[in-house]
Every structure is written in structure tokens, then in C-alpha cells.
Image 1 (tube, rainbow over the protein chains, first blue to last red):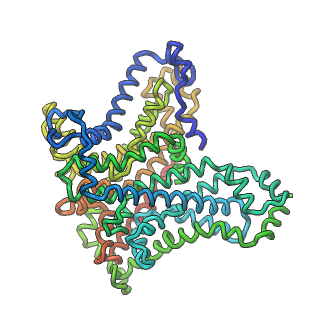
Image 2: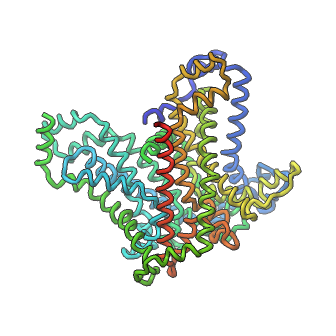
Image 3: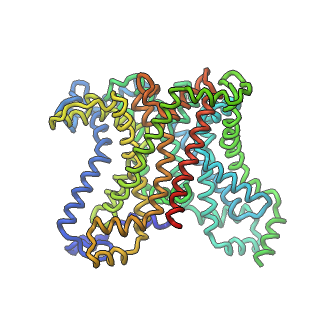
Length: 301
Length: 297
């Protein structure tokens, strides 16, 4: 799905300077149409990004400022970080952030290693039972997590891993979809290169690590980013498996904050800003892979 | 050459292929397939979190038929599909058409429209709980323009509708990117031919764009209907863990979570509800994909 990667290209700067704006086929766009497009774009922008900015603005408003005013005041009169200090006095928000970071990092490592190895085994190695192994991952991908979540919980209890961060990580540690994504990536590599390496005496680990893996870095990056995002954002599973507030991740901690201090909007707003900021930074830096992942995931999903 | 190489690969390290696949297979087996089998088995027992179950036949399913909360959950999850899917098939397509042309600054808009996808559903849910609050921004604006305040989160139906709106809001950017990729494949000649024939923008959308994107629209319908039926977080956050004072906004997955977890959880009964979730989800997927095939024939 390289198409997705090409889909959002940067606007050609040359066109901007040369006067009339043209579309991707070099045809001129009429001025009224251009104006209409920007008006609509700004409208949608206000709808999609506005709520985040309102949350940020609320989190920066001091205790004396009226946050319920009508008409509303969009900017804080006296911006203050007071609410962020109050969040960490109310719930151990930095511990929760650290827990989320641990879970997300572990999830990235296990998914990258596990799905690259399994994907390579499915795509490149010949052995009895390979079709069955492929089928296992396809079936696993089709089972909705929500429909087995109670049994996953009892399984964790049987293993004595409920209420632990390991228990949060394990069920999604090698996502079936990631395995199949890696398999497709390996299948798309020309076999001849590896064949040449084999003739030169490289064994299977060497061919995997030195030749195949470096050629699928793009897909691996997609797997890593989606593993991070999925795990950082996940709610239902950690909500079920974690019961001890000291082990909460950020999403569960926020839910707890909301449930206990629901009427303190400034506090909840500051908490949500803390939870969303790292992902926004990650997205701003690595947009290309986020968009590419949508295309690859949709084809498989 | 190729076949002899392959057979030599096999002879060289007979155990390594399985070593490669083992981590993935173990995780998938222990945490996906075993729980699936155990869900099916548990559905026919009275197992509880701390009490091993006995086989009770179809008792759980008979209980489902008389459980008002189950029907409320099924109704709400089904309504969710009906409300969310048409919006998520159409709106992201319109959005993709809006950001398709490479006018200056368009990359910024595309990224900005995607930000709700990146944010956690918990963050998104709490943002909207505050926006739609009795004294929140939306009501302040409505009051300013003279409409008056609306109880988005206090009325049972308005709350469900608001939750659907949040789901659509969060999903817009994701499906927009899928459509954007598909739009790149629509041949320009078709649009030009239609334009020459005097078709306006709306007509070209209906006669050229929509037919060309039909399989993508089916894909979006399949993805979004499955996701919508399994809705949990939005409603959980907006209506509270019990789904409103009398549970009237409970969805099926909320019921699974409420029934089956904790130390007193009724694992057997929750597994029966989970099986319903599984069957309906698979049925939705097959239904949508079959509708596509029939149109092909």
C-alpha cells in the first residue's frame, strides 16, 4: 500500500509562487472554489482540533476564573499551571504515565520481535505445518478481543498475572495482524537475494537478520508505532485486568480521576492533556508511518 | 535451482522454522485461541470468578432470553451500528474529497483532521463529557445563540446519540485516509468524460466517484459496523460504568464487562453474552461482504 504513503504529499511550492493555484492535473482552480474549500477546511479544522484546544484552555484556567461563562471565554485570562500540580497531588499521575510508558514500550519490543520472526517463518521458511500456522494467525485476527475478554481475564488469573503490568502486555504482545503484515512484507521481497546469500553459506538466522529484516524496516516501523499507540490508548483490557490503583495506566487513572472528581473540570482537563500530549508529539514527528499503517491495516483488517 | 535450494534449506536446520514462529504461536494460542475455546465452554457452565463451574446446558442462554438488561444492551449496540455506520461511510468520503486536491497547506489540514484518531478514546470521551456538560461549551454556545441548554448527557436517547457523534468524530480521520488512498485510483478520464457530457459536481460524485469507490465503501462499512457493535468506552465514559441511572444506555460489551469481571463475576453468564457478541460481529462482517459480492455478480 505505497499509495497511502504517496497520498498526502506536500503542496508543490513552485505552484504557490507562480500565481494561479492548480490541481494535481495542472488545471486551474477557480477562485470562488478555492475560497469555498478553505472555508470548509477551516470549519472542519475547528470541529476536529477545537475540542482539544478547549480542553487545553480549560486546564490552564485558574481557580478564580469562571469556566462556565456564557458566552464562553476561549482563552484563559491568567494562564496557570496550577491544575497540573493539583493533578499530581490528587492521583499519582506521573507513576501512571510511567506505567503506560512501560506497557507501551514492552508492547513495541514484543510485537516487533515476535511478528518479524513469525512473519519470516510464514513467508520464507518451508516446513510441515506452515499453512496451519498461517491459518492460526488469520483466525486469531478474526476473533474480536471484546468477545473473549472475560476468558482472557480468567486465563490471567490462572497464570497469576492479573493485576500486573505483565498481564496488561501479554494478550497483545504479538498481534496476529502484525504477524500477517510482516509476512506480506517478507513475501514482497525478491527471493533471489536470499538465495544468493544461501549459496554463499549464510544460515537462516543470518539471512533473516542481515538481509530480510533490513529490507522491511518501513513495515516494522508501522508495527512499532501502532503497537505503541494501541497500548498507550487501550482502555477495556487494563480496566479489567488491573485492580490495584498503584498499578494503573494513564487511561485507567484518568477514568478513576473522572469518576472521583468529575465535577472538577480543570483537574480532569489537565489530566487528559498529560495523557494525550506524548502521542501528539509522536504523531507530529512520524505522521508518514501513521498514515501508511492505516492503509496496510485496512487491507488486512 | 530454486527447488533444490528449498530442499537444502529444509535439511539444513530442521527446527529453526518453528523456533521463529513459536513466540507468536504461543501468545496467540494462550491468549487468543485458548480464551476463545474457554469462552465457548464457559458459556455452558455456571462458572464464577472464584468458583469453578458445573455444566448447566443451555441455562445461560435461556436466562438471556428473559434478561431485560441483555435486550437493552443488544438494542443499544444494534442502534449504534445503525447510527454510526452510514455516517462513517459517507462523511469521511466527503472529507477525503475536500482534502484530495493539493492546494497550499493541505498537508496540514490532513494531519489535523487525523488527530482525533491518535488520541486515546478515554481522552476523547472525557473531552466530550466536558464539552457536552450541562454547563459546558456546547450549551454555552447554544444559550448564547438563544437555543437554550440541552441535556445531552442526562437524556437516555440524547446520550446515546451524543456517544455516536463522538465515535464518528474520532473515526472521521481514519476512514478519510482509507478513502484518500482509494481516490487516487479513480481514473481522471471518467471525471472528464462526465464533465464533457455536462454532469455537475454532484452528478459526477454519484455517477463516477461512488461506483468507483464501491469496494472501499463496503470495506469501511464492514470495519465500522464491527467496531460500532462492540462499542464500550464512549458510552462507559459518557453514561458512567452502569450505563445511566437504570442502565438504560448499557451496551452489550458493557454488560459483558459488568457481569463477568471482579471477584463476584459470573464468568459463565458473561461468556454466553460474549458468544452473542462474537456471532453478531462475524454475521455483520459476512453480511456486508456478501452484499458486495452480490452487487458484483
